[in-house]
Length: 453
Image (tube, rainbow, N blue to C red; front, top):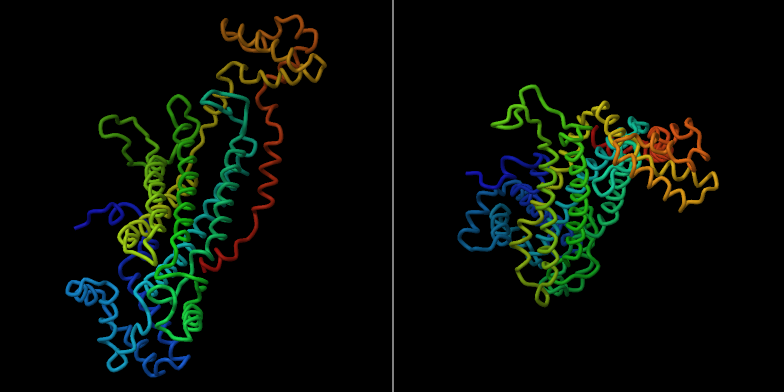
């Protein structure tokens, strides 16, 4: 019986596979095989035993591991016993010298390595889509808003470019933290590697070499959780960016604004009682699940405050934190990309909102023009402010109120005022900034291409 929404509602099958019980089991078995190979290469166990252990892994089934765990109440020993059953005489060398978390933490590193590969690809997809939108709409002038109020004009291209740049920083952060989280260990019960004798460091290095990850330089019974906390922080940071994008789309889809809209399929239903409704449900989903991801930060931070060389308080919470965070961040990342790929623009409403304030949003442009003519910035501010007040009170366009002021009339012609109050003439370097970002980011992505192939 399915209970958690991740089981039936959220998450890609690709990421769910990484964090499934079966995948977890296979990763732990991979570590056991790598350990046996390393120990045989160092002459600690017979070479034939390592081969039999590698062969025995193929016969281990999750059902049998769970059956043993129900009897002994120890998940790691259940795996060791299930593997030993399949290895005959070599079973006595399974897990030789290792403690549970040598296997568990190293398997987690392998899961994170796979997770990061998926997230890196999906982040690139999102960045590509944002950059595509930025270049498409680099000259789509729209009302800029500060404090929820219409301000001077901006462009949709600049908005998308800002988001693309932010996603690029998340990619960089992920690349920077990857070496710190994808590390394994073979350090024994308290970190001294005493159970491996004088070859402890070599065992650890060889094991990780076989698994194609790096060993932690020092650790106790567990890998220190500041590493995992950094990833959870990163996921929370990314989730917040995705929420910010979602909030903006939801805001711009409000009936009163109506500039953009999530795609709506032919038979889609917006409301069970209001047939006309078209709700931004995907963006709302991104925003809602971002709250869950951010909520994982504190418990993972606390997982680094274990007693002495370790206790078990991290284990139960990480069984929830790691898969939920990875599955949900992947889910909202893919969802946000789909929303942007299918986003609809209502250019008529964009233009209407630009003119909604009847030129009041162009007061800065007029003030700057007056200052250029030698009026002085502060005096110009006062003149335009007074004209804006008259325009607001009498329902005039700003340019009509400006033409009433003798000082302004003396400094600016009607044509100059009309030019200054046209929002399409006041977007500064918005287009150049988008093009500059595009030139830098529009490059081939060999990693992504190799994954697709």
